[in-house]
Image (tube, rainbow, N blue to C red; front, top):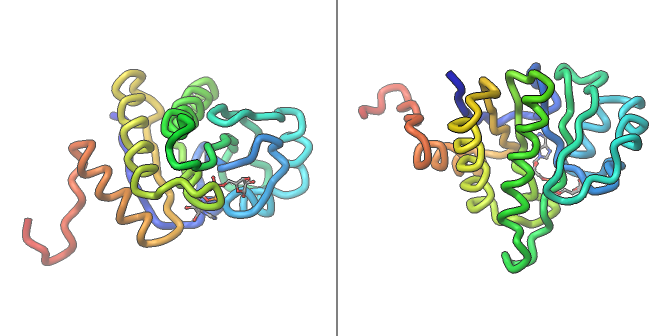
Length: 182
Ligand code: APR
């Protein structure tokens, strides 16, 4: 039974089959989660990325995760937000879909996504969360794998958005806080 969940954490610490990197088309590393992943993966990652570059927006590439606890890194390039007038929403959905297709091709059972495009690329966080959850929900309904999709949020505000999106777009009940009556 495939499922989705959200947590607040540093994605580089997660022991999952694959973590997803919010990369740039050159796959050369950068700031944000891209910088954190490159720092944690160590010196072999740049060469592995060079062999997979370039990666156009919306597409995804896979490399080993080297020093990270994960097995794989799926690098995807989100859209830069230009106000919603340049198919940004479809491109963001493609990031999640293409990452999940790559994951299935590599027998990935657990995959962790950051909030792609919502940092340096400026994509509105609430809309991005809705796109992420709906795209992954539809993918699981069609393909029934990976087994577990985890949305890894780096701050409480993003976590709250993903909890709301999961509640709104799936039957996943947000667990009531202890002592809070349903
Ligand atoms: N773990 C999980 N999430 C993280 C981490 C981390 N260690 N570090 C940052 N984030 C979150 C940010 O808070 C944001 O919610 O990842 C989300 C994506 O933000 P960015 O990393 O800025 O990615 P993006 O907006 O897609 O911009 C990509 O930035 O770093 C460059 O090379 C990268 O050019 C590319 C661009």
